[in-house]
Amino acid sequence: MTHDDLCVTRVPIFQGLTRRELVDVAALARPVAAGKGETVYAPGQPVSRLLVVHSGRLKISSLAPGGQEQILRTAAEGDVVGERTFLTGHRPDHFAVALEDSRMCVFDHDDLGGLLRDHPDIGLRMLRTLSDRLASVERLLAAVTSSDVTARVAAYLLDLPAAVRDGTPEVRLPMAKKDVAAYLGTTPESLSRSLAGLAADGAIELRGRRGVGILDVGALDRAAVSR
Image (cartoon, rainbow, N blue to C red; front, side, top):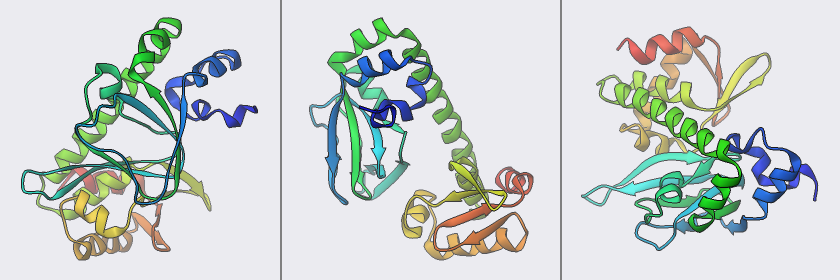
């Protein structure tokens, strides 16, 4: 097995482990595959697991009291899902659905004690990951409470993972625009207008259907907090 074959090498909470330790951790994982549109798990199911996304993309969502879907986030390669249920042993309260064909490594709650006993740094990194995610949610929540859709869109773009392309950071919308709009509590038309407005202001550049180049991080940050 090569180093890249171990999905745990792609996850921040496992970084810093030696090759031997990575192999030991990977031995606890079960490979799971899900086809596009397949539900990986649903609320109330008797599973307390940590999912490590090896390839593909998952949508994490819940149902509002009125039955409407609320998209919480998406998870791509290297992301982890289910930290709370994994740590507590409780059943999940949300859905995990594959947005495309996906492969995952799954750790069961029963393995948690041994994993943290042998590798205590993993627990600290898990807490940092949850803390970072909370900070991201708080920023988006502050934007969502604003009546200005552009503030929500700007905050959302700032929290997406970026890669450098043509000398500038670029993010990729992880879902169809209608799903991104639903996540931000707006309509696809308003989302498109906000993206076009940010592009006209020189903060971003629209690249294809889902690519967004970040031309001016400062301008985007001001748009997220000043409205």
